[in-house]
Image (cartoon, rainbow, N blue to C red; front, side):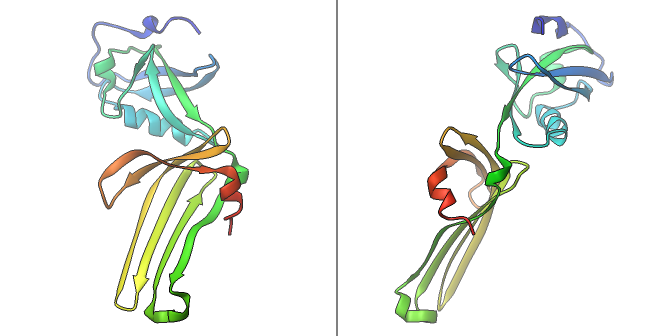
Length: 185
């Protein structure tokens, strides 16, 4: 409630502890975070996330400006009593579970001499997810796992990944709810 300019100041000590109020975009107060000017956007998101029962912190805003994970409070020039907004992506805990997205063996009659491909997605109630992929055959076995977050967006699930094997991150797959419900294991 009120203007975000009330939290803006022209100077702050690099060790001064501050309280910053965090509001939802709706205007409802979510929490207060304790920060110093050296606190990063990622650290603030983590503190806010720790207090959420469901969903995940998708973005932090100062007015209309998105706060990057590497930005420091000193970059924002906030003072104690300042305000931020948090965008929380919602999850439905009823959708938490393990989904087999693909399980195939080619050709099936070859048994151990064929190739198999398995792809599994695990959605957790805290909005984190893991994606596992395994491709194997008689002479090889490749497997990797990525992790990230998920949220409900209309009639589908939107996943954002931290892909360790490629070093990339960001929005990736969307899965229609009907498809996922048919794949729950």
